[in-house]
Length: 168
Image 1 (cartoon, helix red, strand yellow):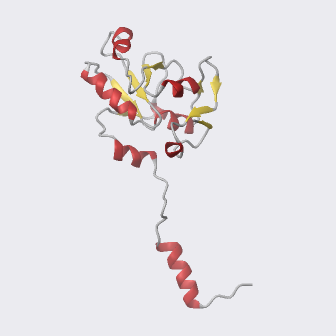
Image 2 (cartoon, one colour):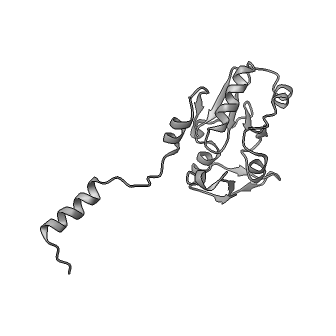
Image 3 (cartoon, rainbow, N blue to C red):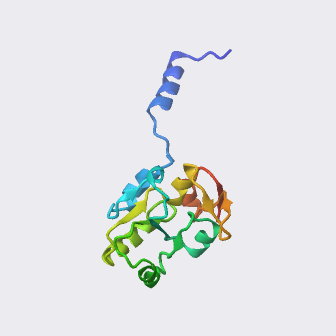
């Protein structure tokens, strides 16, 4: 049995109760608040209706898309955004479009570009493919087969992916 003096007990209790962790894991929500302007309205994964009436645009790097993507998504990239592909593919500018990336930062940039091109029904997937997978959403590889692998972009961002197999 351990015996502690009263001052030691107070020291332990105050350390546990009143100190902040030095490396607190930030939530997706806090990170999006930091990096995004919320210029493109969010749609939350649990509210996304995959009914074939909307178009999903993957705004990640090609190698990320090749590891896994949402079913039926079209890769449009980010740094090398294929604006012409979008214009040729989505002629009706009122078509519902959902853009996504890893957590929703890069996709906001592409969503802004789509809005400037005149598209009127653009949403950003809150938490991106990471939150989709965290909520047990299915992702697919290039062969159209469901996979647990998700490209995590890099080690820093991978902390937001709680489910699935992390690939770099």
